[in-house]
Image (cartoon, rainbow, N blue to C red; front, side, top):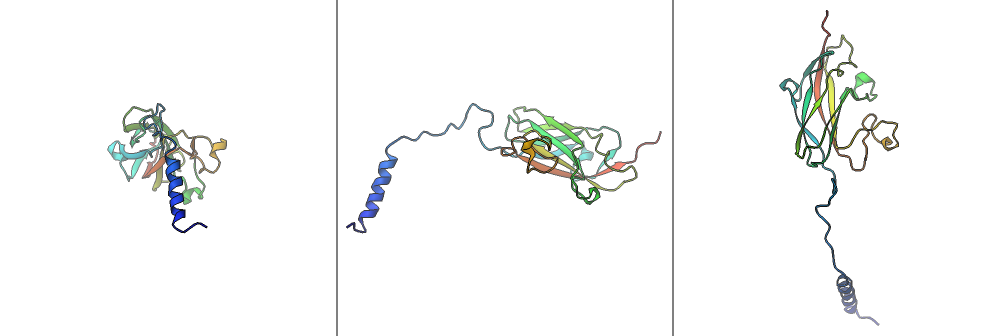
Length: 187
């Protein structure tokens, strides 16, 4: 018959025997691959020129392309930065139906945490009626993985028009402005 004091001794002896039987090899903290660990989230810090600063209103002239330059920070120095711009993605004016991106842009890895991504603005007023001079929501989605079409099998379960490659590793964030469109110049 085992006494109450012998059981803890046996457990302690078994633990000691198991832990002394091998050596522990620490993981490589600087592997040769580009992305060793979890992805950090890219974040939009600011927008240029000054009239495109957050929160707006950003006023655009229809058909005129004035580049929107986004300052993005991402601690993953080897990542390409991908941006899509959405107008009224999920607002009542669209019947609650998500709308596709009206502009896409990207910036290659530079080895720097902060990068500048230049995005076209010419098409951003396209989904807005000419007579509509009201406020709209311009939303930028910034990601560290490429956007993929909704028809791609990897897009299943992701929001419409916002699907990303490698969904388990992808990191992303959003930034929004109030946007207005001026009427087209009459010639």
